Length: 510
Image (cartoon, rainbow, N blue to C red; front, side, top):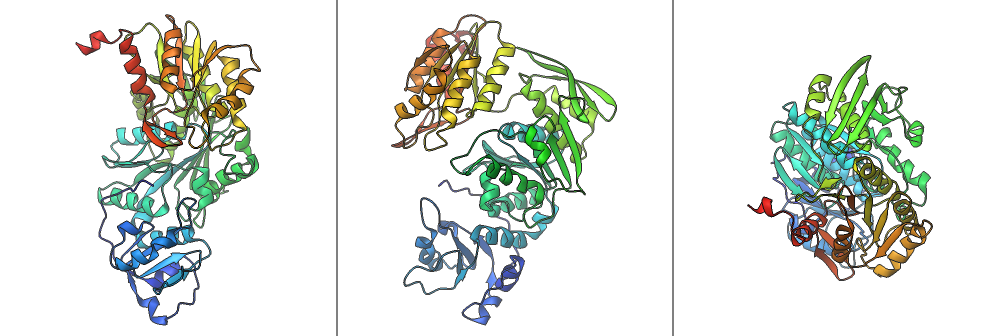
C-alpha cells in the first residue's frame, strides 16, 4: 500500500481516557493509570509510529495489522487499538474496540479538533462524475481567492501542495491531517470524493460535511456491495451523517431516479439541479460541439449565459453540480459563470490528445456501462464522422457488468476494439470473453486485441478525418495492473507516441 507522507503539524497531546471518551468507548483497561497516558499522535502504519502514539492494527484483506503491533511498541507506541485479540506473546497495552476504523476516525477528530471544526467540507458521491465535479468545484473556489484542499481519485491537493492518492477517499486520520495542513496554510474549504467503500468501511465516520453532492447512481462495485440497494444505502450515509450532524447543504441531481429516495435532512438547504425546468437550478438551450458547450443556466428566476470548453451534455450536469456546491460555499453566480469559460477538462476525463491529426483522439476513465454510454454519447455529439471505441474491463471486479459494457459499446459505436484494462489476477482472455457476450448482441464491426498498446494502434489506424477515437477505461491512470504486478502504462502517453509514429506532431516538435 502506498504511504502518504504529509507535513505534520505539532499537536497538543491528549490523554488516552479523553480519546476513548471522544470515541464513545467505555473500555476496561488492564490498569486504571493507562487512561492518564498522554497520546501525541495516531497511525495505522507501524513505519510512521513515533514515541507517544497509538497504533491501529486493522485486519486488512492483504495483511493483518496485528503482525506489526510489536514493531509499533518498539518504536514507542503507548498502545495498540484493534478489533481483534492480541497476537500470542504480546505484552503491551491492547485496546480492543468494536470497530477500529470508526474508533480511529473519532479519536482523530478529537486530536485534530481545530481542523475538524474549522474546515468546511463538500463531499461528492455517486457512481460517475465525482472527480470532475470535485475538480470543477475546487477550481471555482480557487478562482474566488479561496485557499483549498481537493481530495480524490487522481491526487490530493492542499494549498498548492500535491500528494499521491492511494485511495479515492483516504482514511479519516489522513483526512484530518490534510485539513490540519489546510488550516495551518490559512484555508478552510475542502472538496472531496466520497466513495461507497469509504462510507461502508468507516473512513469518513464522524466527519462533519458542510455540503453533500449526489451526481447519479448506476451499476458498479457489486463485487463489494451485495446488490444495488446496499450500494445505494452506502451512498445515503453521506446525507445522514455518520456520528456527525447531517450536512447543512445538499446538491442533488433531480434527473436521477435514485435521488428522490435520498434521506435529506429537514434542516438542510437543498438545491435540486438537472436539465428539467422542475429543477430550481437547471440548464436549457444546450449546444454541444467540438469546441465545447453553450447553454443557459437558470437559477432563482435569473438566466445566465454559460460557455465552457468542456465537451458533451454530460458536462452540463457536472457544471450545474459544481455551481450548486459553489452556491453552498457562498460564491457569486456571476463570478462562477465567468470562471466556467476557463474551466478546461479534468485529467483523464474526455481528455484530448491532439498532435494535429484530422480526427479527435480522447482518453476517458469510463469503466462502467453507464459511464461508457455517457462517454460515447459525448463523442457522438462532437464527431462529424464515426465513433471508434476502445475499451476493456477490470479483473477481480464485478463480472456481471462486463457484458453490459460490451453491449453499450456495440450499440453506440461504429467500430469497437476490445482489449485489456487492468486484468489483475484474472486471465485477460476470460475477461474479454465476458465482455464479448454483450458486444456480440450487436452487429457492430469489432476487433479483439488483448495487448492494450497494439489495440490503441488498431483504433487509431482505423480513424478517418472527422472521426472520434475514444480510448476508455483507464483515464488518468499511469499504470496497468497485471497478475505479475503493476507496469507503467499511460493511455495518453501511448496515444501520443503512436500518433508521432504515424507522422503527426512534427510542427509541435519544432
